[in-house]
Length: 177
Image (cartoon, rainbow, N blue to C red):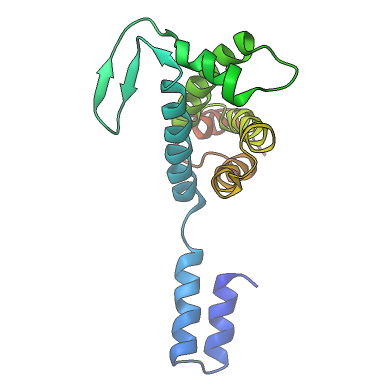
């Protein structure tokens, strides 16, 4: 039963007291647009992965939240390579290969998600990273990775919302019925 039907059912049942108020609040919450949820999710998940990517490079710092900016040619930091060699220890892939790829992905995908461009595909990329981290690196961090996965799955399923480049592209190429 959708939220409007729930409110109508409550009204017809004569629930004008606390129960009726609860149904009315549920109906109000049900009107929160997916586009607003997607925008908040896009900004939040992009910030998490961008900040992680920033720890893996030197020469370029762009931190909108803290207002820190240093523009230069980004290069993989020595600490990133050590991190992949000593702490992450991913099987079947060389740290020298996966460290720069991860640093690149942690910058590209969040930027695309923030813009709402190729959002679903970028979210899939970050979901694969999240699952890799969960199952191969930090298996005890499910509460954090579960939240990340939830946001990413929402973006994959529902898309970036109306405030996105993807929405503009879809509107431009929408088939005429």
